[in-house]
Image (cartoon, rainbow, N blue to C red; front, side):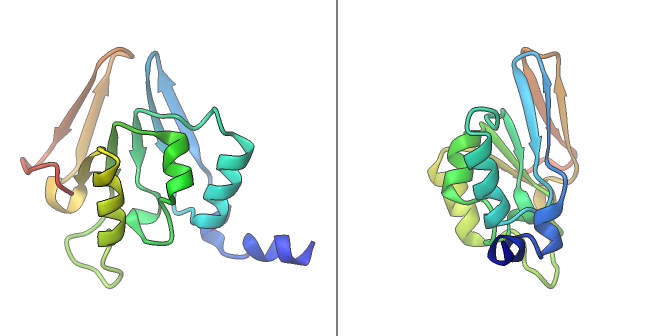
Amino acid sequence: SKKAADHWRDTNNNGLVIKVALGDVSFLFPGDIEKPAEAELARRFPNALASTVLIAPHHGSRTSSTPVFLNRISPEIVVISCARTGRYHFPHPVVIKRYRRKGYRVFSTATSGAVRMITDGRQLKIRPTVQADSSG
């Protein structure tokens, strides 16, 4: 239908979403998807999204990280890829509050630098290149 097609007109919602797993540790890379794509994934794959680490959708934009999507993923850790300064001002404070309320450990590349994640499938080590708090 035309209405359904309009949901996917924005190229952000047509991006590739990848889940990588090794043993008990998994990572979800949702790219720049926004609310319509998050809702579709939550509806179509309700039991397949749970992941240890979530790379924040759309750099922590307020158009992403909806409660329904986050509830399906239920990550322990969220990594936000964003610049210290930029015209879009990512991540959005509302999204950071949402992550904190859910108890996620948050790393932002703006304050932590590159975030290395090392796993053997049982344990996960997080190694930010810049030592900063995990407040995002």
